[in-house]
Length: 622
Ligand code: ADP
Image (cartoon, rainbow, N blue to C red; front, side):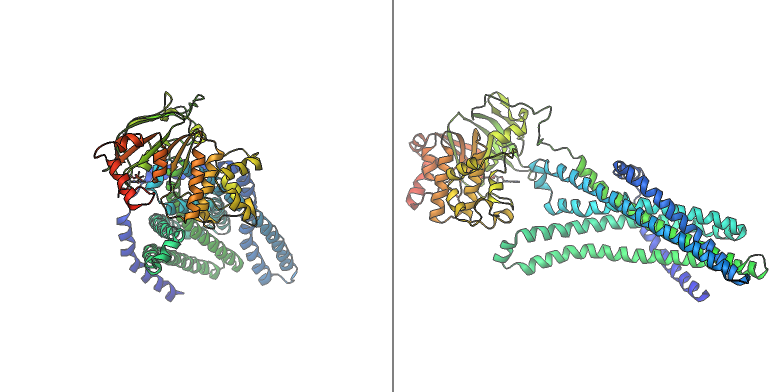
């Protein structure tokens, strides 16, 4: 035993420089930590009935633990001193009965606390998801998807135990320490006082360990989130990776990210080991001291053998409980780290509201599709040094078809994004009738303005669910769905699928062709019967037949509607009431096709002439 203790002692001496180094790096943030922990515990407030029930079972199971060593000592003494086996048998039976009650109480305690934890995380995940999903589009430009999904899955998991099971373990450990100490004082005062020398030292080291671990764990979670982002991005872009044969490069990239978390993980492992060693040493020292002093008391006939045995068992219980407290402290610190990030997400108020608020609650009943764009200037939040739109002013009258044309990167899609209020402009206003867009109810806006993208994304559900995606109501008749699908030239190909409208389209619609996806997206927009339709005409290469169907669907969708189309086809531009030419963020020409073509040296004229020479229908100024 002495040899063992000496080795541990030498180990501890060697650890001191390491511990002091880590301590120097630590920046205590005492006030914030307190607030976080308080809010952390408030998460479990609504689980109070569960927690109270769990605590009652916990008390019961701890009580059964506390009386065990006492009976153990009695059994030893009875065996040594009594003539018959009867007292021993009786005590063993009582102990067995107590243990059975303890086991049942443990089961109930564990079940109830675990359940409360699940409920807390279930609610937390839902709330955080709701908070993420209502953020403005610009937020997603600056935040990576993997980071958000990681917050949802792994950070919330860290909290699950902290706010429930760990609270129960904390209580249990305190009870075990307090209960054991009371019985130990009762058994032998002087022996307990000897032990008390060790306790403050253990507490001091536990605190130190908690601080180090908190820092390391937060770092670990952050690094892991980085790796999660890479994996998520890679898996969702597998086709691009395959096209460029980039598997090895991506794998190396992931490996680099993972390696960072592993490096922190290594430090974490060493730390845990060091801590265990330290506590082990202190415990060994304590036990050595108590054994020596206890042995002396037994030798002097001042203490019975059984009492010493019980005492040692209590001592073990106290040591285990202290070990548990230390690791719980680490867990709480980790949870505080995770909760900081989660609460940041929960508390974030979107810069552009997703639902009606006091500032934006107007639902212009008389809206006829006409809008006025007045002196728009705009810079993307991720690119503050480049103003992508400058002084954009134009008008769309009710029923008009307005075409935006110009070289790619000029700012056409950005104008559509601003009308959808994905972003707010730096200055300038978009008017819906007499109402500025910023005063309009976002829900009303989504119902009255629809946007068909060049590369529409579908969801991994059925065709029917994709078409009805924009509507809240559930009573949409099959006739309505068929009617919009027919208008969008989608009905015939859908009917050819074995499961027709119930066909699943796969993640992001991968099981459909580009042209089919576009036609479903048009049907989806038409079902909303928007007053204003924003269209981004496809430039992506579709086969001739698909292109014809899509084009026909687009033309049909435009009938009897106010439309702003980002046009790439001469036929579309020719039929437009107004053509607006955008170049490098400003309007360079505006008028009808005929008036623009009549302009000497006009940009539009050059564009059309070039297109006529190449003989295809696609306008390109690149
Ligand atoms: P167009 O539709 O005419 O091809 P866009 O409106 O898509 O042009 O782009 C205008 C400019 O804004 C381009 O320089 C483009 O790189 C930039 N841009 C587009 N989207 C974003 C974004 N989400 N974040 C930062 N810059 C963007």
